[in-house]
Length: 167
Image (tube, rainbow, N blue to C red; front, top):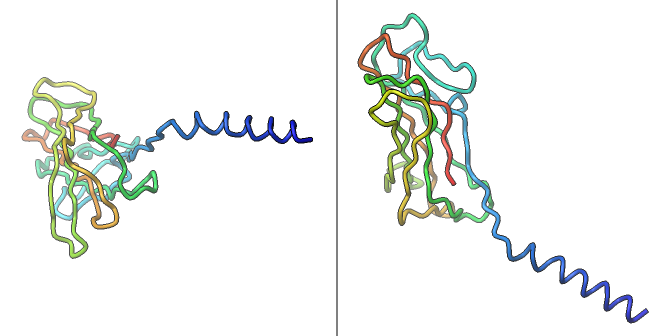
């Protein structure tokens, strides 16, 4: 009986140690369509397929602003995220998609704005990232949001934001 208990304890410790040694990071992601369209954005915005763009037929060149509230997905209050990513498509030379992380005090004032990820000048689809550097998240003191801006200077262009991620 004693040997069985020793074996069971040894087995339990042997199985638990590798699991405890592995750091698990849970990323924050959101589709652009899951974010809130800010007032002042064009009145007709297309939210199809998880992305956000200008609705067909609209001639507006006003910027579309989206706010994505960030939540502490790993429950630590200080997730180790170091990179901001924004996914986009249908970017032409006269369109741009950018994403910025903002840290907000409880009274609503902005404490800091970290990096901005934006598409390259060459027309393309894909994703852009930026390194958050020494920026750290502390959900015990601050709230966080990602602001996505979709802009175009020609009404014939349809830049689209697809997703944002913190990892």
